[in-house]
Length: 109
Length: 210
Image (spheres, helix red, strand yellow):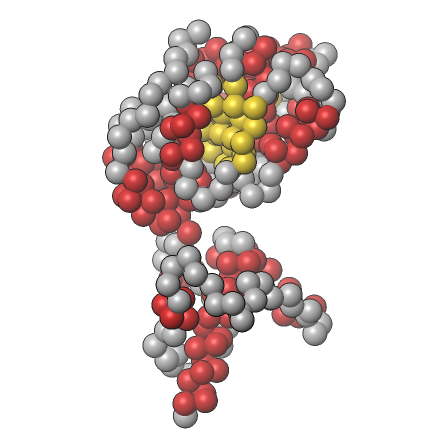
């Protein structure tokens, strides 16, 4: 068989990372369903920017266990994740980010 | 040699193809590493079953998600054959795997929904080839009806021909119970009793290194 081992070729790792990361971006924003646009969202609040990369505040837990009040929200999350072809985890994070922006904006009003 | 088994749709049997190729190459005396880059961990579970049953030949298995380019480059220097299983979607693992692989096997069922993903897949392949100009892209029809009266396999071959970057493999994997039987045992069909399934995998393994 024409099988051979090969050495490591030089690669532009940053460009490859960017190419790979693009896989998780939906092809077009109109694929994402907008159930209730609500008020115009405030500029994104990026909590990650408050802490240096790789560091985690000691008083902030790294995970959150959610107990659903009923099945409706869980079903909706699964449906939206399927529409976006994302994992439920990623969809939940995105939904939470958008929701928190809306809630924060309400408190500013 | 790095063989990446990919597709943009779940369910065509990527893991089945990956583990069966790994067994066939290992039986031919090659040092084989199976890379499970799918968060579902199906290949890793198959490998755990194989280890538990102490089946020989032994196959190494690595689980890695996220960017896998450097992992594959490293493994390619240590193993004769690296077989990579990724999730059935346009994922970071599939894209970064394409930038390192020698061969990408695009697995599709002879169904409209599977074949309709080839357009986007071709676009991603074109981008990957910018990083990896030597990437050899092959199309594999899987789960084809074994009934010769059903023409889906021929239709699918014609559909694949519309994408010149994806060279169709002569080998076709047919819908056979043997593939389901062996996977729970940590075995490959080349270690099983169904001669047709065994011949398919042997032919596929030969074709990919020819």
